[in-house]
Length: 417
Image (cartoon, rainbow, N blue to C red; front, top):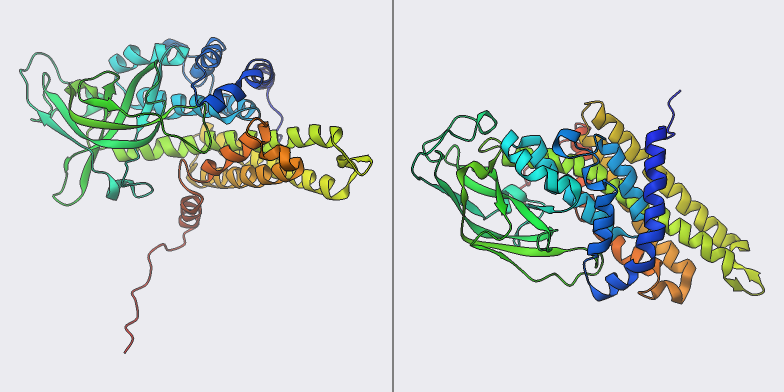
């Protein structure tokens, strides 16, 4: 029989993070949310718990856990607040993970210990102002190599054979912009990994590569925080690059493999986002149960009305299904099995559950659910982005259909006379 009970170490982690969310996050997050402020003390506490190092080995400063452990932590944090949960998810899955998977030993040891401790954060520069789902077609940011004096060996085997425009001592010169970048402008941001056009491999298709840009690099301009509908206690910015220069050894992984790298990162990130969305969906159940036991109408607690009971039952079923979906995707990923379809199913199922549960919880709370200081009000504002970020719901359906073997090319238009 297949079981879905957490192993003892994961259950202990779940209880620890749940207690932190209730006792540390819940009492203060509403104030940060309303002030549109980044909760540095809360993030520091998460670092002290080791949450930013969960899926990384101890040799890199991590906790020696796995991505399932990260998902457990994300779910419990999001049951209380999604801003701190997305800060963790983006810092680990989008910021530190590319360095761990594709970085040289020197790059890993230079950056990962601080990122695993939570003392510093990293960002993922993918989306552009004129782009979105069409990343290859919409990308405009360019990085051109400039030669420099040869003063040492090339970056190493992880970057493939040295090219004439990538010799040691040279620089990458980056121009362009990125939009909606999480953790890009905090006081503790250490770097952003930028996807940029580095050439045209065959004269037609863009060659895309990943380049590490440390915070504070001349030519990198960090925009003001966006005024967002939700996730108001997280940091999201636009970045611009103008003659931004970094050493050639800041190339991450093999030149020309940047898009393939980030496709893998996004697949794994979708599992993490599904866990976060499941937490929001479950948080809506938690708050609705509490309110149904307290609120009275027509001389009875509203939890005694069948309409409320059925609504909460449906909410619990959605959260339960979402949890099974992300557990399944995480298990496949850890087993080294193909995960693209399972990750898309998990992300689609969990984001649908989060949005539906947030709507139902707001309805149960009535006018109080429409107040910004209410957790349910924050859940409602935070839920919508889960159907957009890390690939829209439409993209998830496209992936699932494609993995099922369904053709995604439209037939030629029939000429009408």
